[in-house]
Structures are given as C-alpha cells and as structure tokens.
Image (cartoon, rainbow, N blue to C red):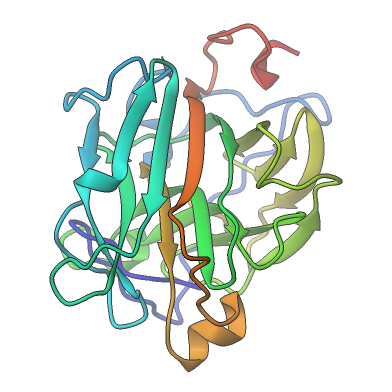
Length: 278
C-alpha cells in the first residue's frame, strides 16, 4: 500500500514505466553493473553500525504526519541510540501536535540504486503497527514515473511473517506475506534485499524468501531511492483492514536496528556475514 513520505511526497498512478530488462549473466549470477537506467547511479557502499547518528547521512523525521491514516506524529525524541551499536525507534503515547501518539522514522539524505541492502533488526509488535525497512523515491519534478519503492514491512499483528512489496511508477499491488519461521519481534535477524537490473530478491538470514523477475508488462523499480527505517501505527477503515485495529499495550513499543548496509552493484562485500560475501 503506497503512502506519502515527507520531505519527499508521492502519489499513486495507474501507469507503469517500461524499463529495459537486462539478462543476468551466467544463469542466476548478478547482472553486470552497466546500463542506462537511473538506478545504476546513486550513492556508494556503506556500513552503518549506529555508534552515533550523524546528520551527514541521516535525516530524522520530526513534527509531521504522512496523512490522516497515520495515528502518530513523527518525533526525533523517539529516535535513540541507548547504547553504541543499537538504534531504537519507538512508538509512545506522548501527544505531539494533532496526534495522541508519537513514532519514529529516519531516512538517508542520499539516494541509492542497484545493489544489496541489508539490515539487522528486531521489529515491534502490536495490532495496527508497522516496522519497516525500505527504499523510496518520490515523484521528481512532478514526474510520477520516478515514484519507486521496495519494502520489507513487519505487520505488528503477526510478526511471524513479513510483507514484501514494491512499487514502480507508483503502481503497487505486488505484496506477499512470507513466513519467517521465527518471531521477528523477539529475534534479532538479518534481512537482505538484492536490487538488480532484472530482478528483486528478498532474503532472511541468507535464506531466499521471494524473487521477482522483470518482464516487459511488469517492470521493477529503476530509480535510486532513499533508505528508510520507520515504526508507526495506522488508523482508518482502509488501514485497519490491512494492519488490524490500533492497539497500544500501555507501554512504549520499540523496533531495534543494529546495522544497515548498502553494497553498490559490483562492489565487494562490506562486512563479515554479508550476503554479498557468498
């Protein structure tokens, strides 16, 4: 389900952007890093282990909501590094502006394209809640064809699965729920997205969950996007049918992140245990 993100705004449209489909070299091997798609450009490889949260790489959302469907206000106070190597995003019943709850989101200032995106995290759990790790690009200069997104979304009503989705030119409806084999709210686990010119691959702890290959009538994202981490709760009939009714347990709910890494297509792996090191 597509939702607007500030400071980039998005809008859905029923138009898909036709992209060139590049064959993968040597069967299932990754496509080579050459081509004209915008996603061949973008930021370079990095590994973030959250010893601090510098404003050079990260923007912290604060003081606004994405729309009426969001029942909490983004607050920088809900973004913390309680100990070195651990980022927490928290939803709390602390009123802020027009909402009775506050929640948390950070996003990279730079956009990133083809490559491998990895996160080590533990999701929050509660009906109506979403813990998310995703890439997002809004409509650039009013051109909605650039409105691309690729998601890991953990729905707090059932954290033994994960929703995987993508949007191309604002067009979605590609979501699936994949079983994890464990509870994402009690287990720190490694998740990876491989975004290649001809396919998308989502994995957990090195195990492939889903693969989508591009076709002429079903293209995949091709525009570099910001890396987003968020924890929020929804409201309204449409979102209740997706997330379940909002249910605050009477105490703050936290999602924890120990590492976020991006390895640009063609670059060597950046840390021991990376899926790129295989």
